[in-house]
Image (cartoon, rainbow, N blue to C red):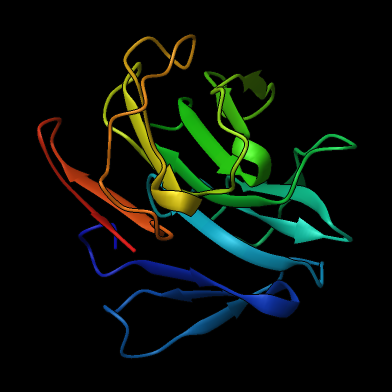
Length: 178
């Protein structure tokens, strides 16, 4: 929710839905794909990114017109992608299978692979500022970077289960759920 009643949702079969009234009514947006869409983030009603999987490879879709038109930003061989988070129209991060992380500072024109030293699937990412992010995933994995993904620490979660969602309110207060 962008705080103004705009909500976006994605799902299997390339489904992307938009609500402009806080979820009372929904409009199906054209994505022109049948991919399994798993993550979505909009920074304003016009600029958004969707990630997911098509034919066991990652897919990235970007819109600058509220979802009426989408541009593919993925590259061949990208792994299955699970989650995306942007802090503005330019700076964003994506996570997925095999500990994969991709970072952009130009709205997704270029996605730079980052090394986490994690081999398990990462399910969720929260970008706290232009340099700091926290991800979580399979086997209780938590990863944190404070330098734009150049280095990652692996705080102990005391969980061996799957951690599927991370969200922060500011830079110090967050939740991770499994």
